[in-house]
Length: 207
Image (cartoon, rainbow, N blue to C red; front, top):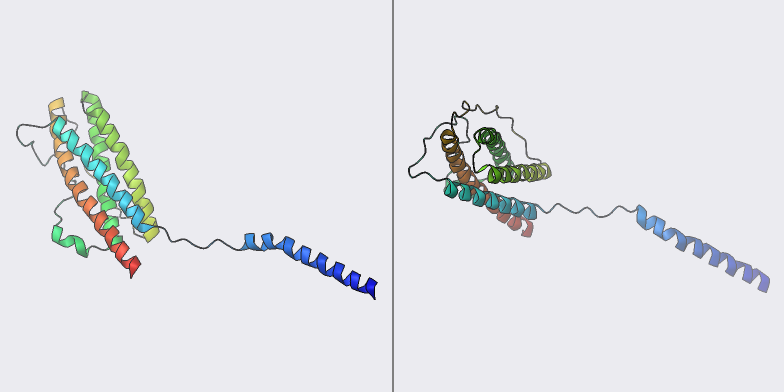
């Protein structure tokens, strides 16, 4: 009888040891809980990046400012910055991000044109212009990542039509002034939009 009890105890201990050894395997097989992407954090990052771009744009305008307003309407395909502040609270996430992305891509094409013209005529603002173009590409990438998260559609506007190559450095300067003035308006609007969308997302998360 004692031998039988000993065998039972030994078998029970062995079975318990085997079960305990399998616990790490079971726990590792359980998938990690899904974490919802932090939309608010990403919108705040977009707002900060846009703020940095606006500051660089303002610096370039100060460094190479005209005493009078430069000639306008060289660029026929720039995004129209006719947004109203009263409309900002009614904006919806997906279509708004889609439109901002389309406008940003248009500005990216225009600044690429300006960069080529600046290299040809040895424009003094070329280093800071290159820095700004890098930030634009970074902002575009961040915005595309956010669009994927919220399932926003990517628009396909026609390629912008560019003016003829500027014949002189003075013409490059005038073109850069017009482009920078429009881009500063875009940055003003986009920064406010990202901030408002972030606030809306915080409020919906609390509810």
